[in-house]
Image 1 (spheres, rainbow, N blue to C red):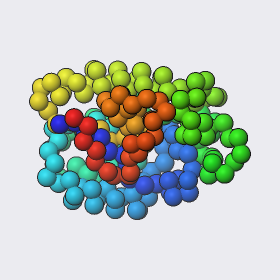
Image 2 (cartoon, rainbow, N blue to C red):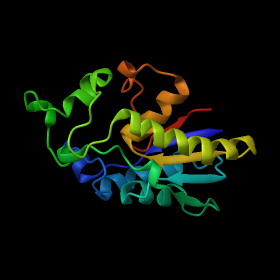
Image 3 (tube, rainbow, N blue to C red):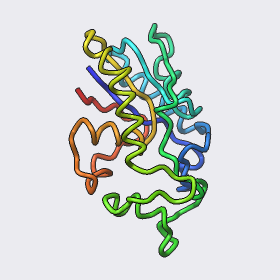
Length: 183
């Protein structure tokens, strides 16, 4: 089996600030969410957990898997999508013509990355490489694999597996600490 989970909440989630690769830790609510997820999914078997190195994802994985003999392996290719100079912006949708909004409102039209941001092509390339090099061999060996990551990064994996068109990139959604079975 192959599963994916988004990290618990952070203060920036609560304030509707765009996090991207900015390393914002879980807040108390995010830790409680991870603890509830640990209880809810305690009977789901995992052999290995791959995780983003950002603290909000790492701590979520640690809480979720506490007391289990499941290795947590971090990998840079599981970092959240970079939103460049727009990381830290609050309520971007309330700012008329804010360039970062195209990623969320019309992903099929986001073809040129802005300053410091990552393109969908680069995001798909790194997560695709990760799936090929790390996940597929584990699945082929009959292992149950979990990835703990982030909204945009996780959706790049979901989109690839479900073969979604770019315009539907955000359609599946992924709530904080929700376990999604992919295969």
